[in-house]
Amino acid sequence: MTATINNRIVLASRPEGAPQPDNFAAEAVPVPNPGEGEILCRTIYLSLDPYMRGRMSTAKSYASPVEIGGVMVGGTVSEVVKSNNPRHAVGDIVVGYGGWQEYWLSDGVGLRTVDPSMAPISTAVGVLGMPGMTAYTGLLNIGQPKPGETVVVAAASGAVGAVVGQIAKLKGCRAVGIAGSEDKCRYVVDELGFDACVSHRSADLGKELKAACPNGIDVYFENVGGKVLETVLGQLNPFARMPVCGLIANYNLTGLPEGPDKLPIIMRQVLTLRLTLRGFIVWDYADQEPEFLREVSTWIREGKVKYREDMVEGIANAPEAFIRMLGGGNFGKTLVKVGADPTA
Ligand code: NDP
Image 1 (tube, rainbow, N blue to C red):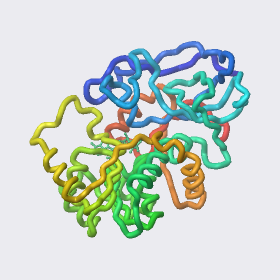
Image 2: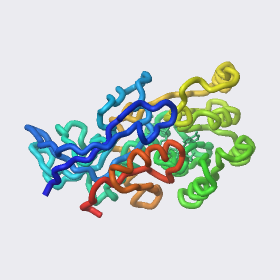
Image 3: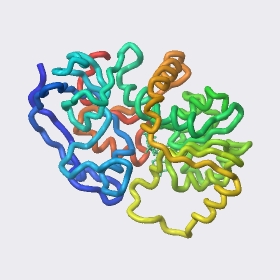
Image 4: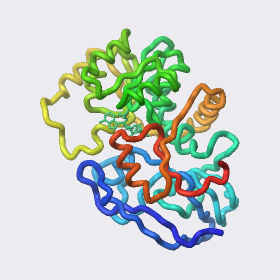
């Protein structure tokens, strides 16, 4: 029987700097009924991702912000509990953008059916979902790693970074991670098989990175910006490629950082080293989703790509988990288990 109450989290106010718990509000509203062509979805897993910080702000971006009072956006794995849509039957597991709530209505557009026999269904918003596809498409299309080259990625134990380094290894590269703690670095090397990993909190990141990349850096998959980017820039090889995926160190900034203008130094590096920097959003490569799913699911089955999930229980805990993730408190892909998983 479907519940009658839908617990959800809405945006209560826009953050100044790091989001705080009172930027969010919990609401209990009636579960909606599907209209013609619609599906009622029960959320099982909600993905928490850094891009959501951008949706909380009105700063110009590639997507519109969440309105004050609006349900926070987010990728979800759900069970179809009522359906007026011939393409989705009751009991189907689907991945879509349900947001931070227990129940939601879909018209079927942008909804993908998940095959639970392929991998645990939570992976549909993780290693086999948006973050995994970000790593796959950004690294292969823009990074273009070649055997023997050195690929560096920061936030290396996280949802995107972990996949970047493992694919780099599969392509015959030296994979070097940068992460925020000794524990994370140990996991990146011992479990994920990177060649080395250094902590961005170490006293001399530049020296440690140099020791880990004796032949310089050919591909830097940019996830964080800030101090890490500045350090890496000084160690890039001529013709290095930089897929610019994310700048999480900047997401909570309220103004420009203090200090000298480094743009002339950066542009000099771009020119003299003939660097390629290219920003991208995962859906620029939407047409590559089938090959991504085919290839990465095979690697997972063969034990060549591993993943780790950082899961909290209950929609009420989403704000705290999201705030924690932005500060590096997550260890693996951040997820909320919103409801029972019938496939587990
Ligand atoms: P993660 O699971 O890696 O979690 C975020 C991590 O960022 C934290 O765990 C922390 O790791 C790291 N971090 C936070 N602040 C800093 C800082 N100041 N300096 C260095 N590291 C920091 O997140 P995702 O894998 O989901 O996302 C990684 C990046 O990819 C983000 O920038 C995100 O916006 C971007 N992204 C871009 C997409 C696109 O289409 N372009 C799509 C998906 C993600 P640690 O403790 O190791 O420092």
